Length: 200
Image (cartoon, rainbow, N blue to C red; front, side, top):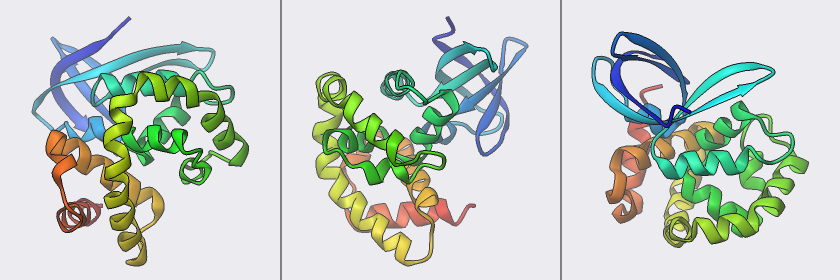
């Protein structure tokens, strides 16, 4: 099992990076949070998960252990493979995933491309007990943060940005700001998210 990789970022796309680890090039399919940690030519450590299935071998990269554990929980749900699990992490930050499950917010998961109502309902139902217990600390911060993020999200959507782009931008801001993200007010979060959206 490859639990993490540390190396130089050779290239970055919208969904993946190529990481040079002691001369070996690893193609890592990354969450938005993991991508936010990467810059071409910089050294970075990514938390990873190697998935081997009938479809082939894929190496997934995450911002931290919390993202990795959430991904593993999500992909235990019938009908959700690794790429769909990563799609969920790309639209919803970790705290929002836990909040959505705890509040049975089916619509939040339906913002993810390829996730329909039945799959979203299954996510909320099957993950409720395990996420509320195992990710309680993530949830405690997510509820208060969700109000600020919801307000900023509404403002960005009113400016014409899609839900997918808004969710991705907020995830990048959260990854970039780390612990300080929880201290951001609506104005600060709006400015930071707009900056990310204008890079697209």
